[in-house]
Length: 125
Image 1: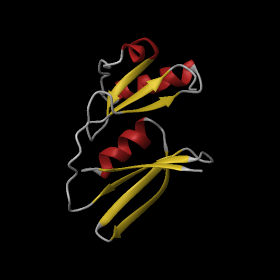
Image 2 (image 1 turned 45 degrees about the vertical axis):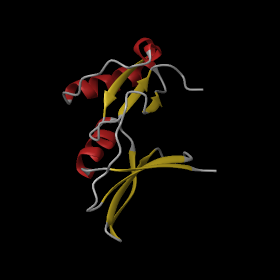
Image 3 (image 1 turned 180 degrees about the horizontal axis):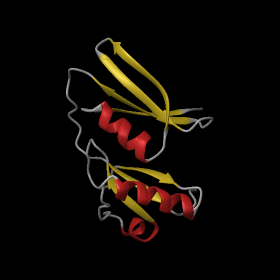
Image 4 (image 1 turned 60 degrees about the vertical axis):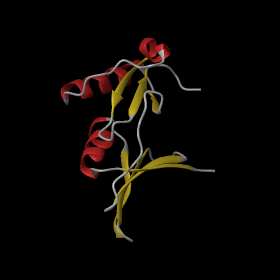
């Protein structure tokens, strides 16, 4: 089984800069003008998941809240620190998470669409 998390966006360039340029996800593919949709697939090669971001003439109506999270588990403490430094270098400041667990074990950021992502220094389960 494979997993795709799809979300409509307002700015694919900002999403690409955030998830590819800073977070380091690979561009798995793109498409343009498919029934008024254009999109971007991001993930990690040979994994059974990826993210899809789309844009169209219709604006998204979703509303992010503090518990809507994508959580990324780093392979090592060095990888975690490298990512935190990349966010800082791009002037993206961490935000206080609602769940205190993430304060102790991770860094939380807001993506270009207003959704939170968590970069965890702990091994995922």
